[in-house]
Image (cartoon, rainbow, N blue to C red; front, side, top):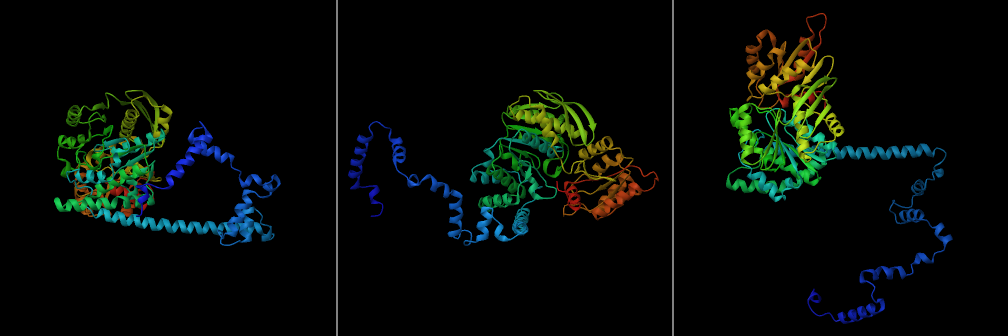
Length: 566
């Protein structure tokens, strides 16, 4: 029976045993694991019989070339190929250098065409996957459960537990702070994975690895790895509660899986919306960050500061160090209550860390930050606005906590902060005239935008270009920026959630007065109109600024139309 010898007596065993006994007598007390090496050393190799003169004639390189040619590994013994390998091009004639250059150029051109074809095919596949995912429940709709994400990640082996994390929430400033933390950790040599939302231009921006958007190939590979398990969980929930993973839940799973596959040393994860029921809240982050909390997403998070703060404080985990930016009193009370419940450590801006000094500079600002472990002087932040200084301080405090609470190398902090970017946040996309793009979409963000423009730019005339989602506090936003704008142009964003431009214009006329409001549904036409409004009138041609704001989607669309990659 096949395999029987594994379980019954083998007649050859006695012979092998006898030989082993002879070997033991022969080798005496020599350790058994050294015997094979000693036998190999005693063996006479064929190469030992070759004379020195013969060895010089038969070099390894000659043998390799001969083998390649004779065995048709180079499609036959082509003399020109052998000549090229040997560096002998004389048989090509006097113009061999030109022929060689042409050949290499042809090879490079062929390779470039192949690469371009591959890239186009993969990008097409990325778009197909994206369309499949966005057909799911939209990311702005909260399904109050973590079960689907937890179950999917459990099947995958809980990749989110294979690296430490920093978890960031808040109403305003969380994306910028996330990017700063990522930049600082990268400067310290930490291989990071960063997860942010929403994206501006390319969906791959949401998942970055070591500071770069996930590659198209990695995006496709990650999706194909997790898709069967997502389908499995979808089927299970279809039979129980009739739900399936949402758009944002799928991307959360993709991010955590991609980070583990790379692998990364740490993940920097921004909450999508809220905190308690956000898909990202399956991580057990050692460091949490809560940026300023304000009224936003009332339909899903609640209509009061306390209700919203309760959702966002849900990311606080037992024993966690929580970096807390300046908060309204009611929000801070909720955060401190939650921290006390789970024995988390709160480090509060103004008490445990703060911006001690801040000076405007060309292209940004110079700040001095105090943290629990050190004072970091003259750190250049290449971003505008007082709020970005506060974001930078929170980022430094978070990285300090992540690195064990010790003082950080000041030069590395400076290098990391210098590399920080925040696309779509007070971003200058053109000069003469200056055009600024900002994602401010709630009253608190609009207030900060107005103050930052007034402080950081020496404009004599400022014109806004505005559009918004239908669920936003449009009157509140416009009321905050009205003192800083000479006039405003209302435009139309793409998408079914966008508020019609004419309806926004009616609200704008109530806030600004009809003589200061224009409407251009096409975004580029709206920007051109704003430029003309800013530069008309005064013969002195004052310094004009155009500020496009109101939504991350609008900011991303402007960047796309202007062919600017985030």
